[in-house]
Length: 192
Image 1: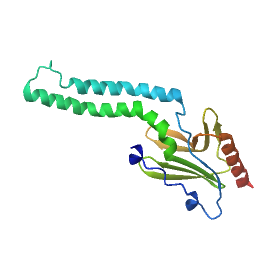
Image 2: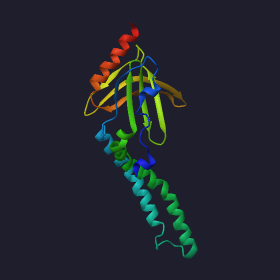
Image 3: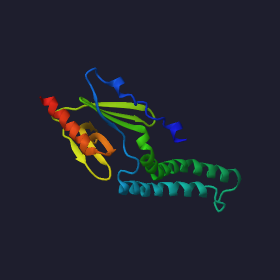
Image 4: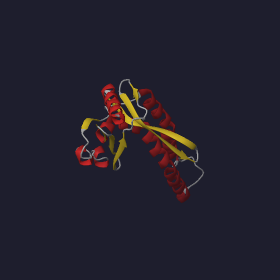
């Protein structure tokens, strides 16, 4: 059923997006499972109060001890259920959504690296393909653990809250050291 709402990635044939002188060096996807188990557990626990409050309000909306009778009692009960629905949806989404994302994200995210660019394709609600040019002066980081994260681009955006930093990369992959080495090689060849 999940593939009905989230179709698999369409970006399987990377060569359709390459320049004539580009060649594929590596392709992959995140490994299945939670990248950070403590964070996933924390988010689930964080969502439980929203879910519990929403369910409590929904079930107590028709409580017979309320001082209303007849139509007013039913109207008040329906109003309470409608009020509770956003809390139930958000709470269930946070509590269970992080586990679904951890289990299924590797089906909907694809990575590719060429001798010039990095490609990140996602197919959750809609299909997106983001392309990042590998520049010689980009800071590259390798985070090793159960799964590896290779960050190759930093994007700064400014909004009303100030400047925000976002690190772009290949998250949750195996063999991160190899990918890190390929990106460093691309950087060296870019300066030659």
